[in-house]
Image 1 (cartoon, rainbow, N blue to C red):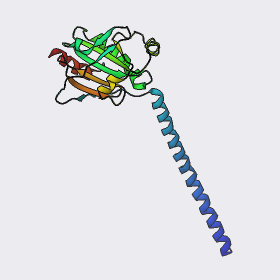
Image 2 (tube, helix red, strand yellow; image 1 turned 90 degrees about the horizontal axis):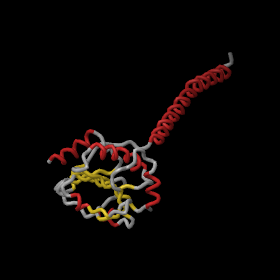
Image 3 (cartoon, helix red, strand yellow; image 1 turned 180 degrees about the horizontal axis):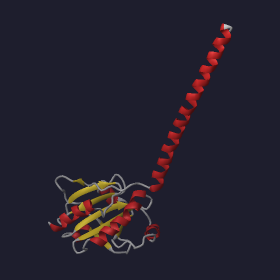
Image 4 (tube, rainbow, N blue to C red; image 1 turned 90 degrees about the vertical axis):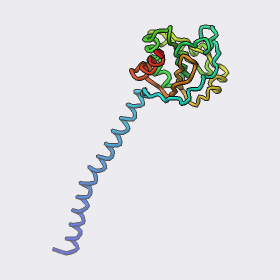
Length: 200
């Protein structure tokens, strides 16, 4: 057989073998990328996950003042809650983790005795009508006070850098825990930390 013909046939066979092994490899890569994209899409559709961690605030400084109108036209002052453990939550309706954690805050509020505990949900810069429309989606309805920081002076004074940001304040008005990002507020871990403060 002609040597050049033999070389050509070998090269052709080699190319066929390369295509045979390469095509499945490309297929596997594409399938892997598609699987990753599907997982990312599913995660986005499921929304942000809620954590349970809290950061302890060393030296437990006194909480800064809050004196704001509520959605119910009542004026709320943080000083009025001395003797109670208070959760102060800064939030907005456009914030997905804020929306996700709201039911867990309501569940926590229902679970604990309001004679020892309160939640103050401070909305940052939104109109009352927008907040009311947002709250109407919840069943059971939200029972804890919703405060209106329309000027956003309070959120600035507290040094909040992201939403949601939540503080847990002891009976003496001191900041004990802080967290930024959505939390499962009725989790065993968080509820135990709050109950410890209530029982002190």
